[in-house]
Image (cartoon, rainbow, N blue to C red; front, side):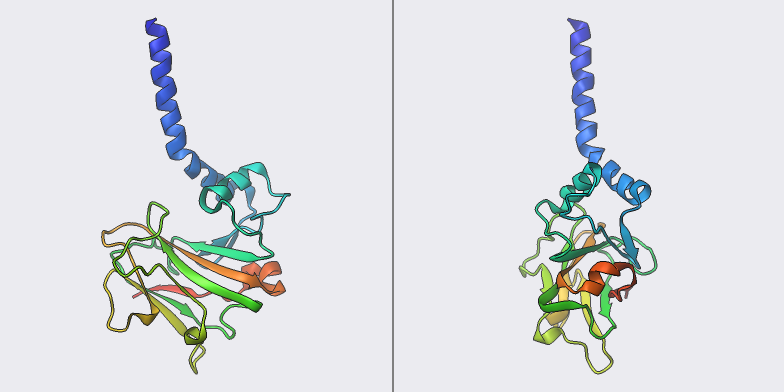
Length: 201
C-alpha cells in the first residue's frame, strides 16, 4: 500500500513538472534542433505555421503560443523577446520600435501589420487605458525620412498616439509583429526582409 502511495506521489510530481516545463522544452527543440525557424535581427518566425508538412513536435510548439494561427500564406508572425543588442526585453526599460524602410512592411493591397505586447505570462498586458496594440493605418506612414516609431513604456507619454503600455512591475515581455496578407517577397525571403528595429531608449 505504501509503495502505491509513493508511486502516486512521484506521478503527481512528474506530471506537474511536465506541464510546467514541456513548453520550454518544445521551444528549445525548435530553436536549437530542428533549424526550421528563421531569425532576422531580434525577430524570429517559423514558416511552418498552419502547414500540413510541419513536424508534430514543431506543430506542438507553434500551438503552445498560437493555436488557430493562420498559415504563412495569410500571415507572417514575427516574435521578439530581445532588443537589437540581444538583451532581454524588460518592462523597467523603455523602447522604440523603429520602421526605417520604404515601404515599412511589404504586404498586398488588403494587408496590414500590427504590433502587440505580451507579458511574461504570454497574455496581454493589463492597463487602465485598454490599449494593447498598434496597427497600420493612415497615421502610421513614415515621415520624410522614411521613419516611423512606436514607443513602449510603463509611463504614459504626453502624446500617447504611438505608445503601447508595458507591465507596471519589472518583468520580461515579448513583442508580436504580425504581417497580414504578406507579398511574395516577405514569404519567400523572410530572412532578408527589412524589419523594424527594437532600440532601448
